[in-house]
Amino acid sequence: MNTTARIWDREQECLSRDALESLQLERLQHTLQRVYQHVPCYQNKFKTIGLQPQDIRQLGDLKHLPFTTKEDLRLNYPYGMFAVPMRDVVRIHSSSGTTGKPTVVGYTRNDIRVWSQLVARFMTAAGVTNDDIVHIAFGYGLFTGAFGLHYGSEEIGASVIPISSGNTDKQIMIMQDYRSTALVCTPSYALTLADRMEKIGVSPDSLALRVGLFGGEPWTEEMRREIEQRLGLLATDNYGLSEVMGPGVAGECQYQCGMHIFEDHFIAEIIDPESGEVLPAGAEGELVLTSITKEAFPIIRYRTRDITRLDYTTCACGRTHVRMLKTYGRSDDMLIIKGVNVFPTQIEEVLFQVEGCEPHYQLVVDRVGNLDTLEVQVEVNESIFFDEMKKQREFVDLLQKRLLSTLGVGAKVKLVEPSSITRHEGKAQRVIDRRKEKS
Ligand code: DLL
Image 1 (tube, protein in one colour):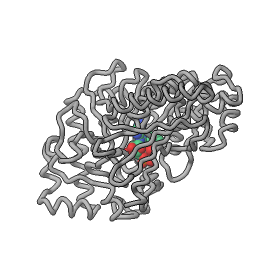
Image 2: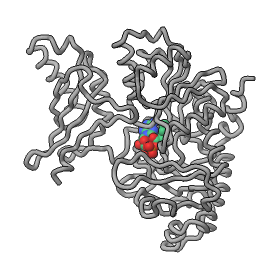
Image 3: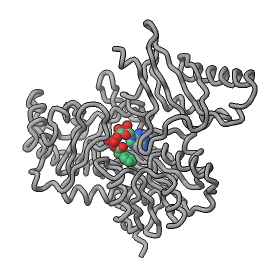
Image 4: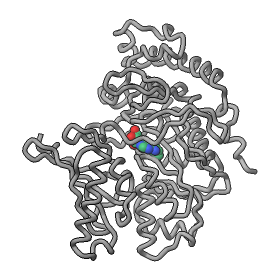
C-alpha cells in the first residue's frame, strides 16, 4: 500500500487561515497553562510582567509574552525547562552548540510520535514514499538530525539505511550497491560526496538517487543547483532546531519555493532583532517560534536568531501553511566587518556565480590595528591554478570587485588549491574569527 495519503495530512496541512488560527489559539492556551503550572522559569517570567495564561485571549496577545532565549535554557541546564516528570521522558537530545554547555531537550512518547509524523510530512512533501530507500548520512547521537529523519522515514514506510556520518567512500559504495533513492545529510556534505564521486570516477548515473533532503545549515540557491546537477536529484531544504524539536519544524515541497512551517504545531513570528518588535507579514527579521503541542519541552516565543521572511501566498502544492524563505543563517553567524553586516551565505552566492570557483570556501576574519579584515579563501579548479599569473590576478580582481559590490565592504581573496579546505561530515564551519582570540 502506498501510505502517501495518510502522511499527506490534507486536513491539517490545507486548513483555511481562520480554522488554523482558532486551532492555534486553543493549543496555545493549553500550552501556556501547562508551562505556567510545571515550569518555574515560565511562571516567574509571566509573574514578573503580571501576566496569567488566561490573559492570552487571542493570537495577537502572544506578543505580550516574554521571549525565551538560549540563555534561559543554559540557566536551567539540564532539565529545568521540562514540563513533565523524567519518568515520562523517553528520549533526550541536545543542541550542537559549540560554545558553553549544550542545551538539553526531552521528548515524551507522544512527542516522538508527533515528531515522526512531522518529519514524514516534509519528506512526503518532497516526494518520498514507501518505495524509497533512504540513506541517512547524518551522525547518529545527541544531534536531532539522524534520529528525526530516521523515525520520519519509518513512519512513511520507506526502507532506512542508517549509515550515519563519515567514511565517504563507503557511503558511495553503499549508495551504489543498495540503490539508495533518497539522500539525507547537510548540503555541504552532499557536495563532499559529489566531489569524491568525481575524483574516484563514479558517475551519478550509476546511482539511483532521485531526491535529497538537506538541512541543518544555511545554503544558497546556487549551491542547490550545483548539488542537483552533480548528484542528479531534486534537492529540497528542511529546517528545524533542537530547542524547538529538531528537523520537522518546516520543510519544502516539490515546488521548492520556501519551507512550509507546520503551523498546526508551531506559531511563527518575525521580529526586529534589535527592538524585539513584531514585524508585519512579509518583512525580513528574526524568526521566533512557539510550540503548541509539545509535552516534555514546550517552548514559548523562542528566539531562533535565524533571519528570514514569511511568505503567506498560496503554494502550488495546496498546502496553506506559511513558508519561510531560505535563512541566511543565524544572526550569531553574521559577521560585522568594519561595521557592515555580512552573512557567509552572501559570499557563497558571489563565489558560486563565478566560473572557476569550486564550491568550497572559508572566511578568515581578523583585526589589524583597529581595522577588521576579511579574507575569503576559495578553492579554484586546476585550470586557474596552472594558468599564467596575470590571469590569476585578473580572476582575483574580478572576485574582489563582485564581493565589494555585494557586501558593501572589501574582502581580500586568496585562491587555494582544490581539496585544501577542511571538509566536515556534518555542518560546515566556514568562519575563522581571529578577533575572538585577541579580545
Ligand atoms: O540542525 C536540526 C536539523 C537537523 C534541521 C537536520 C534540519 C535537518 P540544531 O543543531 O539545534 O538543529 O541547529 C539549529 O541550524 O537555528 C539554523 O541556524 C540552522 N539550520 C537548520 N536547518 C537549516 C536550514 C538542527 N534548512 C540551527 N537552513 C538553526 C538554514 C538551518 N539553517
